[in-house]
Length: 282
Image (cartoon, rainbow, N blue to C red):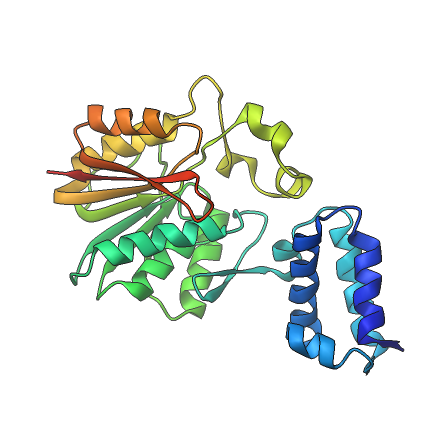
């Protein structure tokens, strides 16, 4: 038997050499919530409670995987995004808090109903599903090149009782025979290969490289394809929303302007980094 405080002390001692303090505290909170259903306040108030050995063994198993840099979201099989839990697997990227801001921007700027929306490169479906839930009676489609990712996205839509039409498609060679859209959104691969040296092992070793990286000599390859597709497939006054690499805001602005878009804006994320590009097709 071990008390709550002994369990949290065990996790801290095992993991403190790997994770910075703020991240470690967040991980401990997530694990305590998942295994014991304890909030952070419960963890403090019930510090002296003795826990069943089964629970402690479960936490030891999770800690063992964390020691190998496996992301906690993959260990638990879910990630929190825009107020809901989404299933994630190694076939999908883990949703980032920054991307929630992209959803909020779209919702804030599009109050009308019955909008046709396309999410290109949907992954676990977090953007498409969040928009389907937050916009007024939208018709949302989402594409991905990975059948495994689409299976996860379809599962998430089913679990969250949300209608999204999913289909396989390649951002670099997209199908242009369908409907036209009021909104096209994408968070495509944008991390340059040379940036790998600055990334954490939990990202490099576990998240799908095909959803992350682009060649250093062509960092905007996906955005160029998306912009050309959107120029054909957006309705009049349709809007394009993109998550971008903070290294290339000026290049993104130039690309969208050259492709025929107006009202091109670069918007910072909550950390003050240029993270989103939006544009309108007149």
